[in-house]
Amino acid sequence: MERVREAMRSLRDARGYVLPHRGLLAAALPHLHETYGAMYRALTLEEGGLPPLQRECVWLAILAACDEGVGTHHVALFREHGGSDDLADAVFRQTGWAMGVEAHAFLPKAWAPLFPGLDAARSYLDGAAALNAGSPLPDATARLLRLSVHAARGNLWGLRVELEASYAARLEERAMAEAMSLIIWPRGVNAFVRAADIWLQLLRSGCVTPSPLFAAWAEASGQGPLMLTPGA
Image 1 (cartoon, one colour):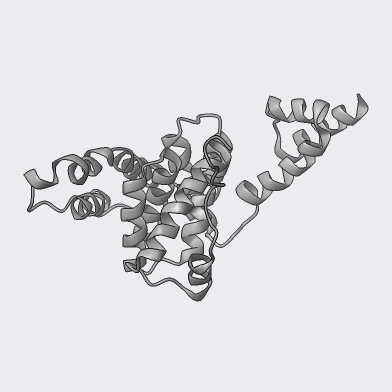
Image 2 (cartoon, helix red, strand yellow):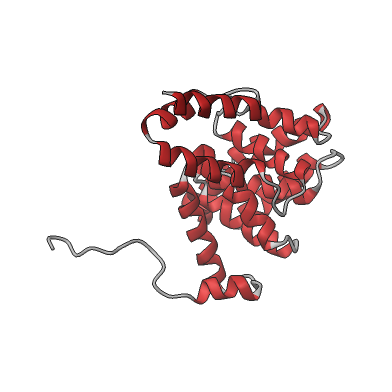
């Protein structure tokens, strides 16, 4: 019992609050409680390659897109690192635009012959740029948050469009990967797996030129789910 109480005290002292699932893990699954904490710190608290304010802009977008109001500590971090209402307004505008990508994705899927002069990907990207014109949100941050929103919501057409456009805009691949990895916490690993598969397909298509590290990833064979023989 004292082990659980000490775990709760330690968390409360460190963060000022404790969500109830941590107590459940501490009481029933202490080993998972420890490893969970390590992954949580790596994904949400420890500084990676993204500047802190850029990272928190991406977090606000992911949480809004996932309807996860519990992540108010990211609002506090956004404010702590200089985030303003005007910046948040721009973040939520871009989030909303990304969430509505299905309308653009529908055109090449179902009505491409009916609108032969319309480039759905270009229309979507131009709309995002126009929506962000004059705002305090840097273009690179807007691109990263849209990538992450698509990955979190499983909008794979939009994700591929944004990945290809991000290469054209010369975004750093590690920044793109870090931003997308944040979805693991609110959305789960499987959503990140699907997003990674879209990225891998893009690299192998030859439509973009990856760095040597990412080219090595694309060249590796045997990537994909375990294939089972029916009836075996």
